[in-house]
Length: 112
Image (cartoon, rainbow, N blue to C red; front, top):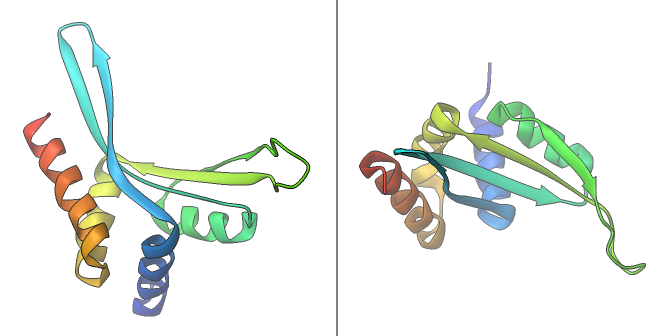
């Protein structure tokens, strides 16, 4: 069971490092719009922790593209899991992230 402390920690992490939006796929005669939550970071353990809560898998490492950079990892939650988390986290987010969530849910509902 996920605790309220873990939910608050995830909200804080996504406020700083997360992205809320939609992914569009165009299939013949039927476009699909999926809500998504994505986070990428160089700390694999933190991305794995977030992925565990979000019900996502970790991809990577990607990079580094130059010697001065670190490799990074990505996790993306989509569909119903992303919608549920957006609704759960909404009240804990700042105005910018709330705007991203409102836009993503609107696009998903309206299939824009």
